[in-house]
Image 1: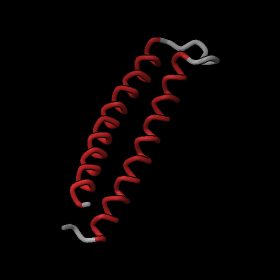
Image 2: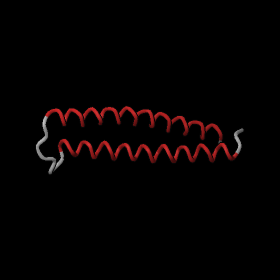
Image 3: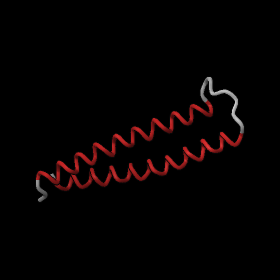
Image 4: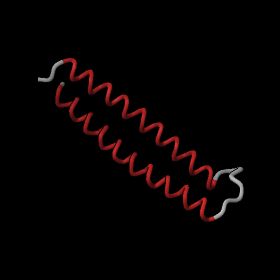
Length: 80
């Protein structure tokens, strides 16, 4: 059985990962609004491509964070 400090450490890590997930999702939304949102203005294809590439990269990071979150949740579930 895991000790209390390990559980607290995992809970803190989970909280940190969830905060990072929220931050990355907001960043994705902000970038997408630059491309197609109201008031986005005219953009050349190169700018649009760069923004969409950034979105794809962030989505990859987000996927890793979500997997990490699920792993932490499993660890916490096994310890209780």
